[in-house]
Image 1 (cartoon, one colour):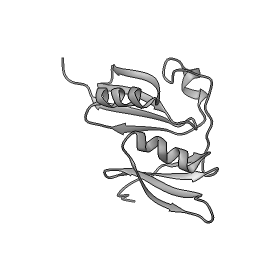
Image 2: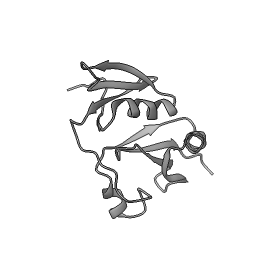
Image 3: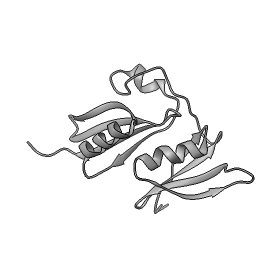
Length: 137
């Protein structure tokens, strides 16, 4: 097998609200499918695409946790998908998320494994680990 790309599929409660959430981050709606209302589609930014499925194809559910990385319990509390996104400047993304009211569950931090990383949470409990390779000190 030699895949050329991978597209996560997120189970969402409200397709339009999910697209709007991604649009806050600068993503675009790529396509919609389903009649009379959308049940499947995707959002994209650059070469990255994520599929959205209304009430199907995977788990979802937001936990009561305010953070997502301070304990094993907080890491398991949300029932959605976790994924990593690589960006040029994680601190700029953090500023954008704060301005747009996006649920930031971990502020940018230099991790011991050489990544500067933050976390945000989608309304359905999907967690995005957003990272930049840490600058050498």
